[in-house]
Amino acid sequence: MFEQAFKNIDDALWKDSGCDSELDYIGQSSWLLFLKYLNDLELVKADEAALQGKEYAFILAEKYRWTSWAAPKNEQGEIDYNKAQTGEDLVDFVDQKLFPYLREFKQGHIENPQSIEYKIGEIFSELKNKIQSGYIMRDVINHVDELPFLAAEDKHELSELYETKIKNMGNAGRNGGQYYTPRPLIRAMIEVVDPKIGETVYDGAVGSAGFLCEAYEYMYERMDKTTENLKTLQEQTFYGKEKKNLAYIIGIMNMILHGIEAPNIIHTNTLAEDIRSIQEKDRYNVILANPPFGGKERKEVQENFDIKTSETAFLFLQHFIKSLKAGGRAAIVIKNTFLSNTDNASISLRQYLLEKCNLHTVLDMPGGTFLGAGVKTVVLFFDKGEPTKNIWYYQFSPERNLGKTNPLNDEDLKEFKELIGDKPETEHSWNLKVADIPEDTCDLSAKNPNTPEEAPLRSPEEILTEMEALDEETQSLMQSIRELI
View 1 (cartoon, rainbow, N blue to C red):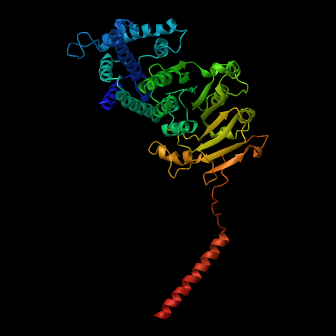
View 2 (view 1 turned 90 degrees about the vertical axis):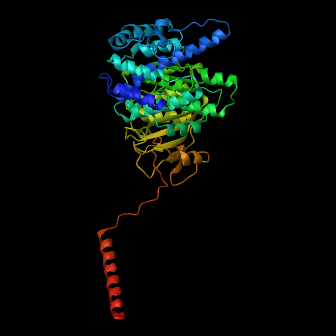
View 3 (view 1 turned 45 degrees about the horizontal axis):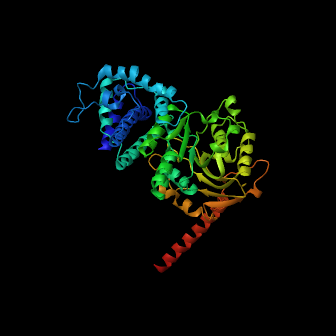
């Protein structure tokens, strides 16, 4: 039922002239899903308050609640089309009344950016309704209204469908791929850093919140299901920051569907923060991230960092090192050129990483790992507090070309996860002592010394000699046959 509802939503949006890509489909369906979720959550809380003899204070005024403007019901529990708006009236209400009303929440709760009220204001402060037809909007609303958000099994199925939409957005190209990191890679990274209940987990480039959602699943499955642990996991474990508005609402919605009611994601430019102002209270036990590749930051942003560079990912890496608690663990995806770039900033950043952290593992991934991008990447696994002495490299070399039709799967990284404990030397893995790294370049390139050497190409003379030998062998064989005859 849920899968058909999601398909119906996309089919309806495809017909609207204001929505022309997967990016638009997920953006527009997300704000409607959010308001439906908020409505269901408030109704539950109102029922709980009534059972205690209390009156619940709704966040939204009555005329702006889902059950008033989007899906008013009759006595049979069906949408009452005498009250439900449609056509131009519906679009006018959404654009001229609903969105302006929701935007005001940001100003009213600016002192508490982690509150659900502030998140309402943030989501609708820049997001725009792109659905131009009020009849199509009515169709989409009706399909969204079919989706229940309350039962755990419902959320699980909805979260899987939403993840599929995020993946499709990455497949669609444009800038959609930046929001999607392959989940098998995320799960392998999480398994290595092994976050535990009571620790904080952070992603400063949160995107669709894939790292935080998968970390939630990982920790939930392994912890004792006590009331205290559940509260800790919900409220005091996962933290993120996201600059872009579309990614912000997708990340919020993804975490909600995975079971986190009020995600601690802040809508801000992480790189606008001076890393010299980061204090112990701002640090985390575990950091998991895939910062954007290839971005170029302005001079004023670079001033927030000790190592000046316009490369966005390199600034993020500095932020992550500074934001990690002593003894904390990190797994960061970055372009493989970070290991070998010869510019001063890259060399300084590699030296800084090796001095401040134990870079114990580098996972070398092939091109095609990321949908819609042929860029080669590595994953840096490091602990903060001890300098690096030895780096173990693992070069993932699949026997197929990775891409949309052959994406990365969990089985692909099984050997990596099995070997990382002992860090052996194999055909695909090797160790590098820091003492052997050249001081002037600090080159950390993933050059596998254990790859079997290919047989060298033969010279023309060698080929001719072999052909003559084969010809003589053939003549001798023919002579033997004639003698037998």
